Image 1 (cartoon, rainbow, N blue to C red):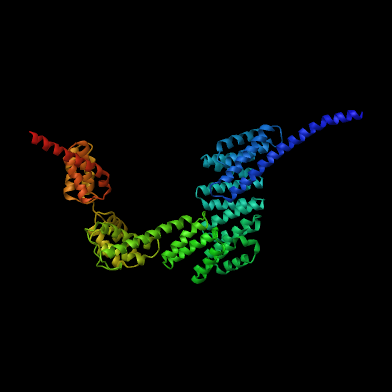
Image 2 (tube, rainbow, N blue to C red):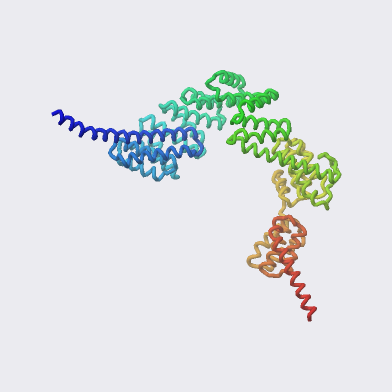
Length: 581
């Protein structure tokens, strides 16, 4: 009897072990799928409004793989249905909308108790596949049909996402608030309020941004989100110039060890407060302190960027600014200030290079070393000076005015080009810029003088057109413009008349706007269509003489030079033949 019991126990035990371990296997596999999905969702929520990073995509992919194992290897387990749902959601979040849609259709058909959930996700698939209005109608209908607060919250959030995508931010904000009110999970509710705070700040609804940020602090169980929300409050109070609130909040946070990880950012905020209130010495001291105390961090990178901005725009200390901007990306390679710092580096280097060019040319031409001189004359025969000097002057003026926010320093450089140089293609451009800068400075009489110079000296230029549009000046069409349009329309059906019209234009108009276009058309006709190289060379030469640096001439210059050489070679051959005869 005892032996029988032992044999039965021995027979049953392996079966129990198999059942136990197989049950553990599919439970563990599904548990792993859930953990990957939760990790992916956390990343997605934290990166809301941005593209999903690779870490999030990888987590969703792992959730799909683990779910697939449960579905394929354990088709009769109780985890099959949740595994299919988890896979369908994961495929949706990585952009596989067709596969997700097929899975949710399967879920709706096979599991009636999941109908509401499946229909919600099917509506989202429609939205992502471009069927916006049907998706909106379905989601609004589902709101009326369900009593499930959790599902209602998700529907509200999806409606918010759709309205954000279509730039209807006010409607999106309303849906987010409704969704937050229906959300049971405090951590998820905190994420929604964080989104609301961002939207409110973007629309300058600072009261709502403050309230939403406070709700993040009240609800979030994530220390980083609490830190971010407090920093957001600091920025809002600073933006609204609520100095007492911002000062009290920063002092409170600096006195709390649990916020030690953001102390550097808070010190930066104090520096920004000093700058806003004109306490320059205190601001510089704080920024240098942050740069030293939090070196090689995102915080020190921002400190260096701010030091560069202050050196450039407040002190016009270009060398110091350049050092600070250069150090910005060295401190922290992924700093959001990297590109802006690099742009400023290039601008300052270009500015300093142009100043060196100006000084060098002035020295070589024995010119006075001041931009204000009205007696500067660049020698026309000096090809280096005639091209480099006005360009350097214009570059310095442009950078002063439109990049370094100092129009007063820019004006003398533009005036030297327009008033003192004997000839430069930059003259009308410099005059046009002066009209804008002087008008903005309230110097209407000086601006009007340059305006009249452009209209009288460069009436056919784009700058004159710009002046006429800005001042509402009526402009009669140029006869040669009308002739050019006529020739272009004739070319298809009456080439002889078209060529005659083009010739009339080149005889009477040597401007780039009309004469050059007519000469180009004539040269092209005689070169390609009529095959009369002598006539083609004549008009190519017309272009070379008048507009050697124009885009039109540069396009045909190689062809022109080749034709000249061929014609010269043919003439030599003809001479040799005549001599033999």
